[in-house]
Amino acid sequence: MKYKWILFDADNTLFDFTYSQKKALGNCFKHYGLEFNDEIFSVFTNLNNEIWTAYDENKISHEEIKTLRFKKLFDELGYNSVDLNEFNNKFIEQLVENSKLIEDTDTYLEKLYGNINLAIITNGMKEVQRPRFEKCEHKSKFDNIFISGEIGKSKPNKEYFEHVHKATGALDKSKYIVVGDNIVADIYGGKNYGFDTCWYNPNKIRDKNEKYADYVIRNIHELDNILY
Ligand SMILES: [Mg+2]
Image (cartoon, rainbow, N blue to C red; front, side):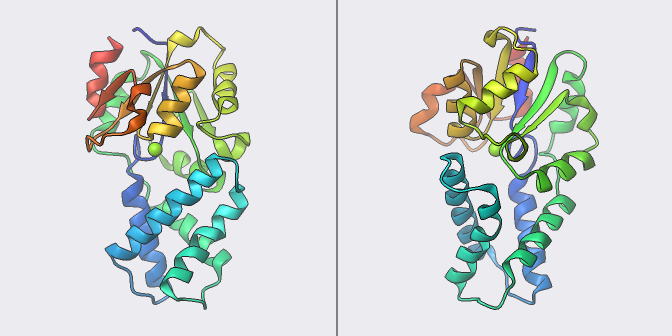
């Protein structure tokens, strides 16, 4: 094996987070007797991405994310009678409930297990990520799980990757590869720290930051061409 560690992003790299979010948000809307459709989900996705980007740029805190995303969504939809904290708690509970791996990922994790060290590197809230990972039947295959909400730093910041590096024995940086779908947080962040990077890009999107990817894959099984 060329590498000693694979640092996997979680959401939309190993886990189908788009599915989980849509299901969770739909169930919350239903719970409150509100209508839900694809358009509302797309408004939420855009608002949520903007908020997480602001977090990655250290402009807002984890605590603020929890209610701000729903405040913005409900302002946009003209709903003002929903308790934001209560809605957020319900949403977190539903995210955990509706977590699932991307198709084919489980067989590939089986194949890797025991041959290389595996870690998860994720930006997210501990209240969401910990219980989701606890529920995942492949949890024990990961030597470490690094959650930004616990560390206090997030991808793509160097301090985040430095924390991961030290906690995994601080081997030569060439022994690590980051695999993730986010071209900034995972790929620019990993490369900027000095790790090799593999962009998981199933939808073949183009991005000005793609130069930071050493490799690009459309499916997790394509890692075979890189690792062996
Ligand atoms: Mg991701």
